[in-house]
Length: 406
Image (cartoon, rainbow, N blue to C red):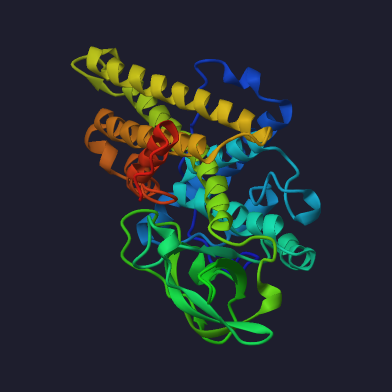
């Protein structure tokens, strides 16, 4: 086995054909621009060539395919909607969405690698950072020469991020950072972390912490049964001296991290459709090929009911995200609208994965098909970037004006 350019040793590709075909029941492709379709098709081809042949083996081994970071950069998956001069793709939010959709069709963990890098690391540095910070970090993040992670969730503060206890103390030209973050995608590999902490006045501030700063460690979390091809860890800060030049100067308070979450949730709303389409595509093909009682199981009424409901829900989700993308391009997409799409589409994808597993019968639990991997992954996607119930309450607050969190 040859070593690749990153120094990693990828698992040998299995001789497995990716027969996926896109599904567009309402001809929504007609509403997309040519550059959206070109971006989507390029990423789809990359997933077929680079992800599908290896992803089952990596998931089985609970190992992250680190060598794909460079490939993700080459296809423009890091910050697609950020300006080219800052390492992004210079495209719009619709392009960002379709790229995330195709990546999650391959695997939710692969989409996480990209969306964390782009939405949770590059975006806040671009939006809230100084010009010096942008020039220093963004081009290298966009090219995959640097890997980043996002530190908000804590061991005791998940759905209530404003209750964070990670804090900084003024020390002249630096801050002394103490605390811990939990469930951080990419953290054991990351060169930098965008970390949110409270100052001595209780104001939330964002800062860029580099991995070689003394007192900073990022142990890996083991034993996951979900997102097994995505590496997850902690961030631990023990008297880490962070120069004030590393603080993001253009934001204070929870507005900073919450705007990053909105960006990431938008990508998830699109991404979940990709996982759902992969499960549906596999189930449809299996139903036409699998014979029972002398005919394809796709000829039976209950199988057709499942498939008809699957494509209906996928189509509804596609319409939801297309409209959300249109609003995002006009800078009109609200956090509440993004929450609705994230919650609806991930739950939809999870239900489709479960129904697809039934259509595949016993074969649905094997790695010959992607169903169980998607199913396990989506259990996590349902929870991260805001749980299913939290997003429901965000919508509830939006429509009633009454805050269930207080």
